[in-house]
Image (cartoon, rainbow, N blue to C red; front, side, top):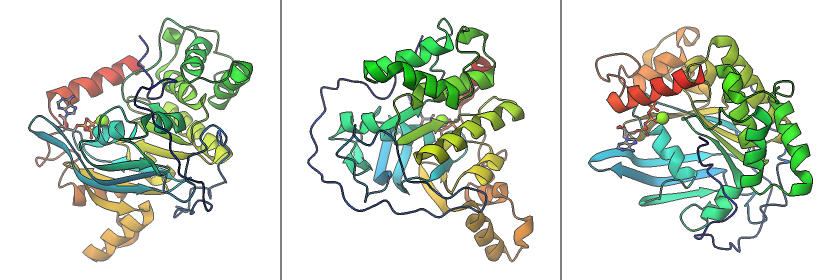
Amino acid sequence: MTTPPAAGPADPDATVDADPNAAPAPQPDTAPNVAANPQPRTAPDATPDVRLDEPAVRCTDLSYSFGDTRAVDGLNLEVAQGEIFGLLGPNGAGKTTAIRAITTLLPVPAGKISVFGLDCARKRMQVRRVLGYVPQQLSADSGLTGRENVDLFARVFDVPRSERRARVDEALTAVDLTEAAGRLAGTYSGGMVRRLELAQALVSAPRLLILDEPTIGLDPLARASVWDCISQVRAGTGMTVLVTTHYMDEADEHCNRLALMHRGRIRAMGAPGDLRADLAAQLGADPARVSLEDVFRHHAGSGLTGADHEGGDFRDVRRTRSTAARLR
Ligand SMILES: Nc1ncnc2c1ncn2[C@@H]1O[C@H](COP(=O)(O)OP(=O)(O)OP(=O)(O)O)[C@@H](O)[C@H]1O
Ligand SMILES: [Mg+2]
């Protein structure tokens, strides 16, 4: 079963935006081990209302509740165009809820979200056209080949027929699945499945790629191969990447900036090195000995494993484990 993609060719809520284009995008802070941002060359003509002088994502006082559970609680967040931005936080912190609101899959009951200056509440269709989304749950169909999965997304996302074959080939090449493209996805390893899902999201040449735990349940080599694909595509296209992960080492190595989220709120935000240096200064510690995991624990209580937070509720555990199991 293929999870419905975030973007679709027809949306009854779509409205036309009259915002003009403006100045070039600001360059975000760059972590030492992350390449400087190239200029975007992703589907420039398909989204004429994209604002180049606006952040890729801006959330202002965003809140979202499931019944009595306040999943997102006054979130303020800006992701600059072209950066790889990591959203970190313990189970149940509200990362997926925030991301689903940004993709327009959840309504925005309180606060405001804009994507490249497009209001997510009023311009859903246009927002969906500029983003690619790899959800936490499985989105590839095991009964289709790799190529058929990507081709399906190309059709759903309205990739012009004349370009479709080339774009599918390009997406498969970008994730190193050309040779395996004719095999059923059900025969793929977990890392290959995750790369296939990346190709599905990339085939529409999004300006903003949103990845919810792209490496969960994968072994270290498969995790590295997924990150290689993300880094190469981002370096080649200049697309913005918003990613959630529980792996601190990945966030430290690959993200330009991070936000640490806990109980629906942002507790700290900045480049990984700055977050580590700030905590070291605060504690009077040797910066070389402060890890991102220390930063995380400091801002999220003993959030990773300790008593302050028990790793989410039963629903969280079941969902996370079943996702990991499906991807193996
Ligand atoms: N569909 C839902 N119905 C009820 N409660 C929900 C639903 N989705 C999320 N929640 C609750 O909202 C809170 C935030 O959940 P969310 O999935 O956004 O967290 P997360 O940071 O993505 O966690 P994880 O790291 O486990 O993926 C949690 O308390 C969760 O139990
Ligand atoms: Mg989640």
